Amino acid sequence: MKLYQAGDLDALGAMAILLLPKLAAIARGRFSDKNLADEALQEFWIKIINKADSFKHDSKVSTWAYQVVNNTYLDLIRRESKRSYLNEELSTVESRADQTKEFAEVSANELTVKAALLKIPKEQAEAVALVWLDGFSIEESAKILGIPANTVKSRISRGKAALAEVLRELDPRDGNQKYV
Image 1 (spheres, rainbow, N blue to C red):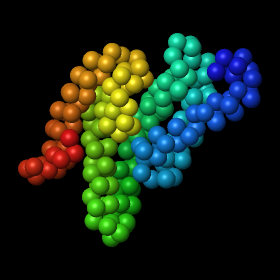
Image 2: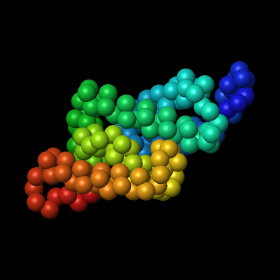
Image 3: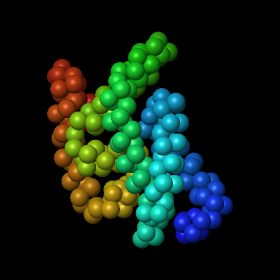
Image 4: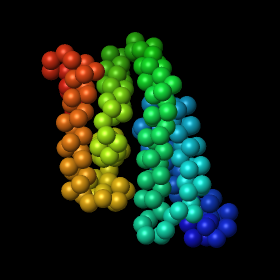
């Protein structure tokens, strides 16, 4: 990163080789629609390039990049929800539902959880997304968010309670909160 900040464009290529596969995996994990995942990957990389000057070398480049990616993801998901993203994706899931019942159920559950994440406080949604969606440990999530591990645990705990409430609102049938 120091080389790129000093103007070495070849260093940007080296960073791309190291970071893009992980960023692509995050995009595919967060967005089930391939086009949206590709768009997100582009936005992630553009933000990382544009914010390179803000990197202070007090953490790993990958940790800093993930912070940028996580904030970009939340911005994208909010923007897309305003464009009826969730409804479009749900129609995509419904059109493929005849492939298998399990696929349709898993996809609908994923969409429901993503919709619910938009309705809880940002700090809680970030912690829940890092641990549950992206598979990071509590300690890794704490480093990415720049907060103590116990704070991550409490945000997940509060987020879990908030998600349960939102999911009840989205589907009020008794016993249908298997997502949380």
